[in-house]
Image 1 (cartoon, rainbow, N blue to C red):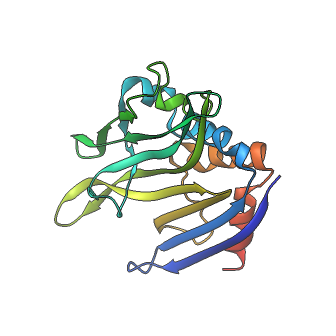
Image 2 (tube, one colour; image 1 turned 90 degrees about the vertical axis):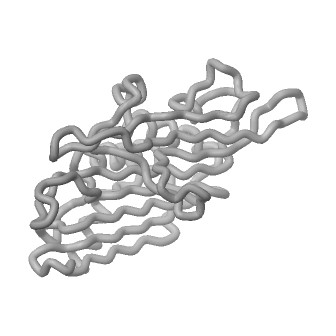
Length: 225
């Protein structure tokens, strides 16, 4: 079960008066023991095996970390925790799943490379895609983010892929924070993150693991916005 600590939705007219910009934020208090299970579901359902195996993503990337020394770098995942190395001994570890720009595919699509980094002492059989359910690892905090791209026409550049919808999920000390942003929606009641069925898959995670219907909450708040 979950405890919805806070939720808020803002929908405003964008600079282009015929479209809407959305910002949604929800903070959910969860059991710390559920953290790894939720992270495992996010990696498998929202990034997926195909992208992780092929080491490339098309029209999907991570998000920048503005607090990092390399703000231009894009991260799907940054996580830290503890590895049990003895009966009472633990070693801190960090993992990252980066998505640096690789190339443009024509004028409509953008391709990113997938790179994973793990602390040196983590066993070689432990991969980032399994980090949420690897034993004896404990996840203490993580930041999971992604953005989808859409081809857009401008007078100066013609068609080019631009970031449209963004999702950021942070976990720390039992608090799971979900942030959704969408630009230039055609309708005020339009749901964000429709590309690659991101919102639908995320909603399945929150329903199955937290008994929280994210889509229903978005719709209810949009109706009163």
